[in-house]
Length: 189
Length: 189
DNA sequence: GTCTATATGTTGATAGAC
DNA sequence: GTCTATCAACATATAGAC
Image (cartoon, rainbow over the protein chains, first blue to last red):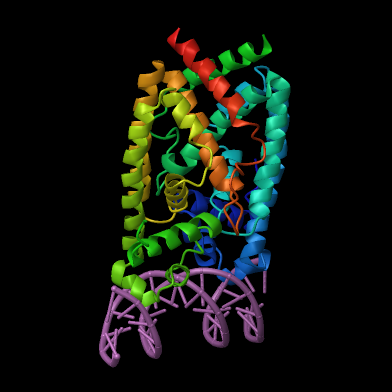
């Protein structure tokens, strides 16, 4: 059995929850503490400031991104397919940090922005190595980004993370993956 | 000569500026008033509350979206090309409202989200009518969205709206438009 | 490690003078 | 129409008890 999460992890999870469901404005120290089931003082023992809390989330983001890179490299269908396929909201641990961190990009210091920029750079390298052509790699990357951002901005309504809701105008993912595969094979031909 | 903007419009412009450059957290009534060159009381005469200020921005967004739809319909290169081409940050009046409003999506009430959902629905209709195939239309739409969101999240650093900066991993737009055209002609064939 | 105060600064909004 | 107070609510952070 998996051990129950430490208080520190519970705080981080609560921070994620509030960011995803209610936005950065609602993710106050008070609210995070209450959601995590600790007092504000207790929270501030683990994270000395809100900036430190953000840093904690970014650290988790970077860790899970490394895992994602590894899975992406090993995917039998190729990095391009992997990127688009995993860009639809699935409620995975990685999905959660990414969307949570995305909510912080505008407000806080540029550390969040920098982390995303680095992660995106690696994703692009992997896709480019898969498809060969820079323009096609760029297009495929943007399709994945569009999926992610649309889901983050419109799909997840407040209250609960409704699984599978990825925005209004998206059809099935399968046919979209078909388009991506067409792009890839066209580029490699 | 164009008449100088009314105080009401100056307030709205200041609101946009702060949202684009410094994020929603920095766009306080105090900051908006100072940027617009009026007092807080003066601001609150034109917009009775911050909610009303947001509503004012959304109204402007909807107006300019209608203009955009018209230009999109009339574009000789087709709606798909138009959508992707105009999705790169250019500092136009429309670019500004879109990015500014995007910053408000998470925090405030769902009116912003609803406005974006409606506008996106119309864009999708126009692109679908252009390219024929739903999956391809979806893919092209996502490419444009990816461009817009990436620019909004990473490209525009705080301090000033650096023109042409649309994120790290994007090559030239021209080759991207080539990929889009390939998708379109492939779908219509 | 976790809690209860408490201090300090911001933010949105009101009242009323000019 | 625009301004200057002024207020209540809230957010971050500290101090110190348990």
